[in-house]
Length: 409
Ligand SMILES: Cc1ncc(COP(=O)(O)O)c(C=O)c1O
Image (cartoon, rainbow, N blue to C red; front, side):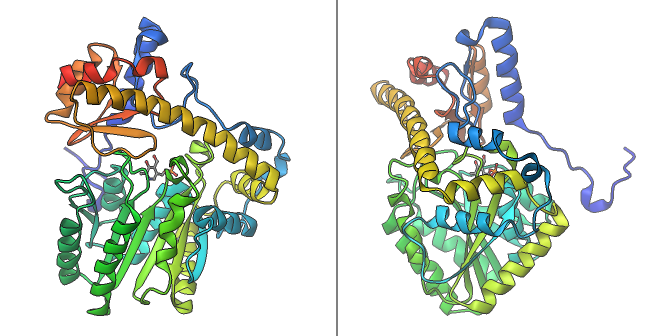
């Protein structure tokens, strides 16, 4: 086959299985009627009529924003008031005692990608858990990195420290820069959250390793779903632990407005760096800014301005938080319906704390998914299981779902 792309780009094909499933679900809804189709594939919040929702205050602010504010360019690093708000939102009451800087990014995905690019070499291996958001692989492949996984869960269905520790140690023997991505709380796809005790253990491993080496360890904490915990204030308490770490450990947070502010397609987020060393954090800010300039120049001004406005007005912030809480409760109710039934029919579900998704580990996920499609149920087939989007399945459709999945498996 003739190819005209440069060698590094040859053979690239993006197969978006999830998008395909979503399209098939929409088609089925048109054909058979919305009420007869269960679309559990979509990672966005819908109300119980199946309509995608936007937090009302977010909508109001966007609709009343002066057009110039929406369409103007913004500084590459991001609007300063947005960066301040992103930092405030990320840490809440648990800001670490460290130097902290933020650089705007095209969503959480852009933040993760920028961290990988600047804190690992081409050819390096990035570490994450075995259940993970698949774009991590795409980002690694596209930037000439490899992705290696450790087991997220042990037999007790808790964070697998042993697997994590072994992987960290092995990779540090192989390369000078190690980027580790941990997605918590409300991990996608399982809904698992790393406990504070587990964070202590994770940090102990990293800090011990950092003492034995001059190599750089960069932690990327992917907090895309942090606002959908039972207690979003308390969910941030682990962040205080990133105070006074050795200077060869850089902690970064991938902040995203996609889920927390229902601004999915507005592509607004930030990479937030935390370091005990002023030069390290200044370097972080500089290199991240250059990567942003090269990749997308600057990000959506209107959406950055929206966050700044919300954080500049306590009453707006309170409103947004309570609007989000309403949907958080709705997701929780739906998840509970599913989990209670799963327990009744003995369907093993991976540990779900809260968040958008629930995952069932199974063999041949594609076959299971196809069997469910025959019953007009659309789930996300993963490599080791299937994922149910509690964020988008109306409560009435949650009843009976666990039983049907159990039968399909
Ligand atoms: C685990 C995880 N991380 C990060 C993101 C980032 O999303 P975005 O790039 O839209 O901010 C998502 C979105 O689905 C996600 O599921």
